[in-house]
Amino acid sequence: MSAERKDPVDAIVEQWAAERPDLDTTAMEVFGRVSRLARAMGDRMEKAYAGLGISRGEFDVLATLRRSGEPYTLSPRQLSATLMLTTGGMTGRLDKLERAGLLRRSPDPHDRRGLQVTLTEQGLAVVEEAVGAGLAVQTEALTAALDAERAGQLAGLLRELLLATER
Image (cartoon, rainbow, N blue to C red; front, side, top):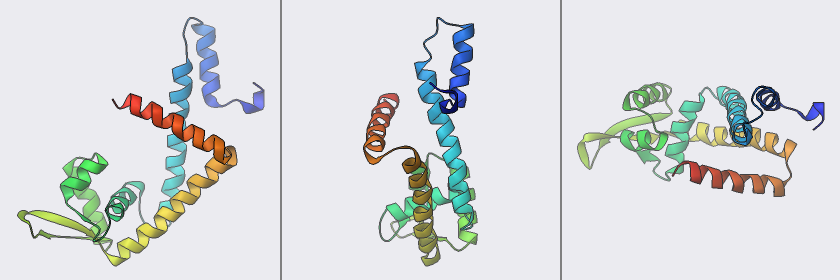
């Protein structure tokens, strides 16, 4: 491997090879890169969403409502479960998004103790723009490094790894 093609994970692996040549660091190479990619892309996504006045976490709430289909309504419990958030964490996000006019909370007509969370027209417009902006950032990064065939192969390999890891 040439020097200009090395990444920070290579340096870590080389240090371990010098100190502990008995270790197989293949898993470290894979998961170290996945972790660094997630962090780097998360930062890029945060910048893309910031221009629309939302954070990544707020995008996740809006996108979950949008993906649910019309009428873009879920209960706070459904949102918490989908996003793997505590109810307290969800409440904070919902409060901010409601103050911004991007969603509204209303009584659940089927459960008088429950609430429904629904995208507003403004929220729908913001999430539509945000999903396009986020996909543009992701596509730019992906196509700068991989052609369509290799990107498909990588997606398949990562799916296999994720399924095996989440068992």
